[in-house]
Image 1: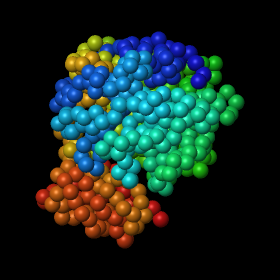
Image 2: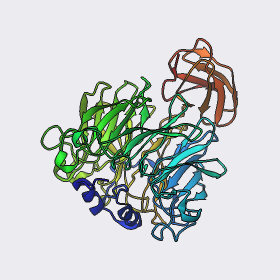
Image 3: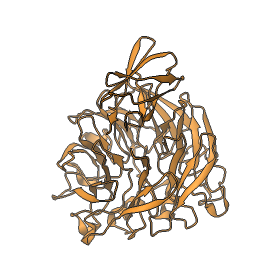
Image 4: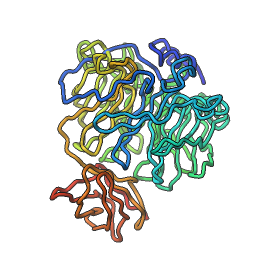
Length: 501
């Protein structure tokens, strides 16, 4: 991978055991060395502190499964502590909503780490019930892997990257409406990353190799996951490349790519002096209810003296607006250097994290942002509750947020926390689109005894357990909200379900 000035600066900011491994990999996530505080204490709970044996450095968001539990990964630690620079090669874990954690796979369990090592991306639960994920290292060629793992912990390596088809997949997979998986690698191809498609049977096709254009104006080094928008196309970001900042390797891009592989660069960051619009977008985009996309940049913004970062929105046509520039408050109590993706919660506001800033030692924050750009710091980390929150938050169907902090806590190897801001329960569909007659699972809390399920007002037949409803898209259904009636209360889906032709 191209060693740009920004990448060298990222390595220079690293610290701790995770940073040691990142230096060796030369392309690992940037561990910033700075701090934070909490302006307003919400109901914040540290659910688990990792101690190395059960994992270390949880960098990725959690996922809520159909059984109601949460699943996640740690990038280091685990049973095979002698591997991966002596600190372990990472784990897959399960956790209850109350914080009881079970480690059910440690990477590098096979000779030569052919099963993969160092998972940085979140898991996804596919429609077949299994989880799919990526490792940034390991495999037959030490370029990373794609794996699937059952809820009982049986792992299968689905694909091993060889460099020509990609390397170092830091982003999560997504399962598109056609049933195939899509993802990115930050290396391989021409050396600066790829977009790929993977069939459920394990056949991988490289859809795009970045840097096909002069000076890599199509982008390079994608880290965040792709998302599938309501128009069916995929959208993503690259950390570097683009039409601007060529001498520094580029400031990053936002791109659209069809499921067939036709890529369009929608926006190149830093078109004006000072990069007031931001630069280096690490996290994935999120498509909001209004149809626009929202995301973060780790640097740039109006307060660019020390690469503080920004939050932006962009229309599907490519018009970008900077909503908030970090370090707008004295002492950067509002945080800076956002690394993870935003999520839009059921109240319409956006929630995310910063690696640094805050009021308790520059260790990171959790924040809330209204669609018009008003930011509130909800939590400032102080070390005992964790610090350096790399991964995105996840809103569980109970309404509570869950997230990881990459370091700190009682065991010094990171934490998992919950944060309640008073939002009520809802339901979530798996998947978010489908044809009439397609099978759909609806996740929720205490769904036993549900009396009604409707797709935008059209009733559906169903069966219900405590945490999941199994149904099909009813005849006559149209795109809209899914509603479940249980115990006299109506729970609405957090996003509209799109009925496809």
